[in-house]
Length: 297
Image (tube, rainbow, N blue to C red; front, side, top):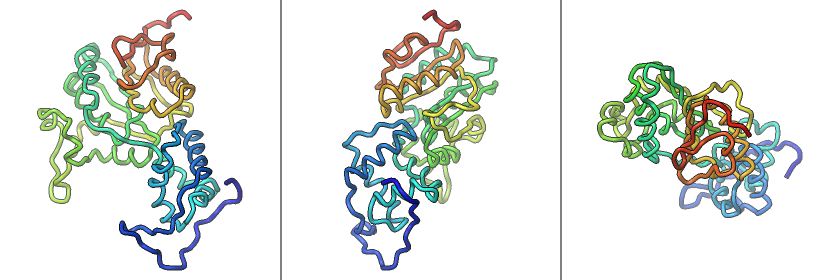
């Protein structure tokens, strides 16, 4: 698949349309082509795709082939790999990264944060980081919880994700109504605005909370540049996509950005067994505390 850069061809004939309005002349993805995309996303993002993801990859990339007029996935891969595919590489990463999230996901974490962690920071500077924030629901959930506890004191939240398109969504702070169903009624009324006219089926997070959030694209597999220290870091529902070695690499890098005395949250379905034992203390399942002084090794 490697070779000279390939430029998108010009379509010279009318496309044949299928029942969904898409051209039906895209060849099925081959195992060799799928392996190229598996290698690409592993090298770029550290994500390990199982063989069962072959058709998922094909369906997510099909429109990109149609956009450029390619018939074969290998041709699209050659284009993306070449000098002319620089911008498209980010699109490919966006297409191959999964972004499922919603407000107040795993609510026990937010209950613990509000009752057992935040009260100690009243009147103090507080920084939280959502390290795989997707479209921003986790960031704004944190904002609601923190605002309820710390009020107008000095606090803010940073959200990062490898997917550029979801960061753009997060920055708008506008969500379909059904995505807001997990927000408790009192908080929904207090911190969300109802859309009007064209946005009548959407809600917008209160601008006062949006001002507390900072978003940027970040690849956790790469060195963390210009990343400050945080009192709380949420690293949830992302580690399941990495193999053990990449997971360890990312977690140890994240821990370096956690202040002594700070807390790391992972998903209830994820395990840090054998990774953080020398650095963090588990205080309850999926919640870890960094001692004020480094433990002896």
